[in-house]
Length: 194
Image 1 (cartoon, helix red, strand yellow):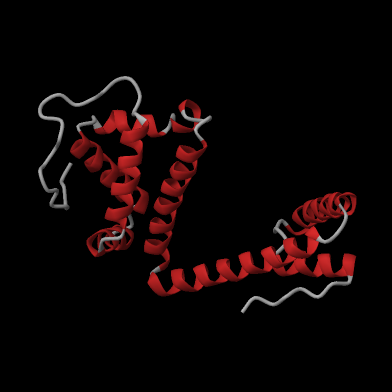
Image 2 (cartoon, one colour):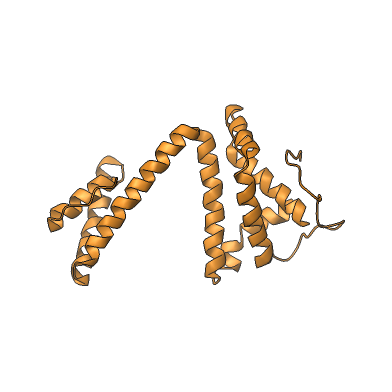
């Protein structure tokens, strides 16, 4: 595997690479921190963009990066990648680690998506996501002011409406459609996200 990063100090596992057992919580947290740092580097963004322009999958590049990080940590890359597939089983009861694991997965997905969309389109998409989240939070704040039994009834109705929309058009309801449904049910004006 050709490395395109200059790792200070080389691999830490002088000689033998870990290839059995399970990665410890400390090893996983180190991987998550290092991976986040590497994803932020301009050379990583360039490498991901090059992969896309060469008709390759960006996830192949992020996997290579993870393998290099495992080597640096003294972990056999194949074993490290296999261990990542077991994190949600082995550490299911460790809430803090699971949150960081899902942030790690999300960071990888977002880096790949940015490479696929390009920086401008990705920034627009993130702005749309932020706006949608603000609208959802506004609806949830208003929903809190409604008695619990009415909340449950609304959510059941919404679920039915979403299933119906999915069955009829094959598309999920948009945030705007959910917001309009909420307003129809309760006659409330939604705060507009700015």
